[in-house]
Length: 371
Image (cartoon, rainbow, N blue to C red; front, side, top):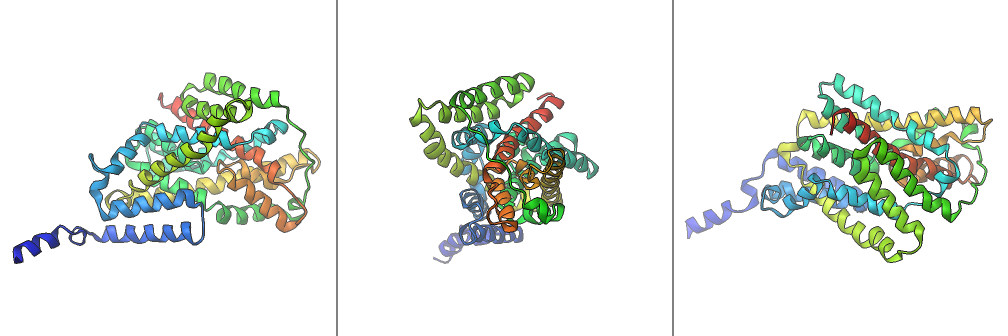
């Protein structure tokens, strides 16, 4: 009986827990608190944090034969990130971008954080492919971060990169406002922009087709992301496949979020995550995101002066890829200066341009490294 009880006790998880596991379990519980109580992007943060909890309680769940191992393989094959883009496209209205093509410039300016972090990462000792994979965090785009890390063969860095990217997506309302206020005057924050023109159905249908042709010819490696993004948008705008749009933006999207979130969280075992490299990735990601936000706002200030005060610089911060959270933050900060100021639709232009811009930045890196 004594041997039986001894063997049973050793089969429990308590005997295999390490100090690192305990630390990661505490982190997972903290992230669960932020997701459930503070409601910071719970659709992303809750499955990620629960995956983190599971892998540190039972590490074999991420080994070959374990449930989350097979979820992760869909990440490694870049299937899940591409399907996320399909759902995003089906949910996204590109009308504000079409109505104000200048928004493309703000979305492009926000990518400065990506390329600035790339140079900084190399100075910190990362190889060029590693630096590229880390720097894309600056776009605040989790699926693109996973896609690029896998394409560049940075599987060992995928966990920290993905967690950092999704964390900064969740923390947009905390990180961005101080930067936006510091770089703008109250007078600039109060600028009211003219109402956007109406966009015709023909323009809405032609836009995803034209963007797909141009971007995929220039950067063929972006086809999985840009192609799925624009296909989803074509489902939305064509008006003839409502069932496909509803499936892509609802049932399929939520299934993919569950698989992607839990598998990303499960890459954060104590052995893989508690390293100095992880700390550097988290710091670089924050720097990249802050630089991207600042670059967007500063370029917005330049456009404000060039247009005689017709553009509110706050919408430049929405040039990062966190849709629609970044646009909502632009609206919130603008409304703090003037409650009658409505910037949301104007900010959606740079915001959706940022989605395209981050995918293009990833394509540039893949072209540089011959992927």
